[in-house]
Image (cartoon, rainbow, N blue to C red; front, side):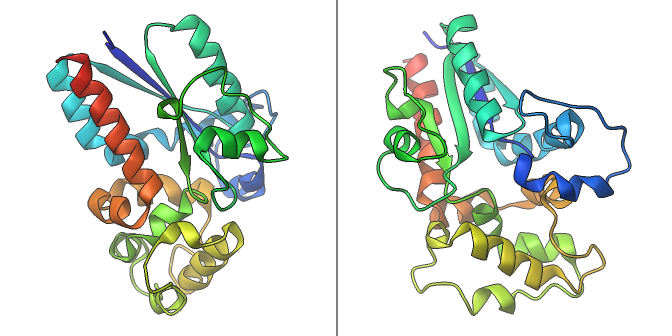
Length: 236
């Protein structure tokens, strides 16, 4: 019976390392990937994810289940920590949550196996243990323009994003390049300045409307549905 859920999440990875240079915090090498932004900036995402997963935490508490968030450095760090957890916490339900970095090519594990930069093995696990932010976490942000408006305030240009959105509003169709480009264009005139993941993402996560994100991002909805089913089944 599942009593613990360990979620290993890609944090502030190598791509965002230079942005973290503006943070006035001590530097130390954080993870195996050696990213300079390290543990301080990555762990800053934890409160945001905890708020975003609030309904999952509430269900877990009612079922006597512990959810443990593990914010890792790069996507490679997340995968390695996930594999280690399979050995150290074999009775827990272990979950890997990383960016897909590209349009979904197949099921989650097959996507990561086929992706040239990853080629990760599922170790015989089914896709319940593998979840993707398609194509990156920023797709979740684009799904809730009100949350972005709430965070950035005056000067935020929602129209810079709205005019480019597809008719079906499926944010998972937006490329990694465009997600970053649109966010920076929409935020460059705000007092907080252009979007910087290391600095802005933790607070945006806290403000997201989960229902909106799940509706716009099927892979996010799948994560919530899977974990809900696992917890319900654990206590049946």
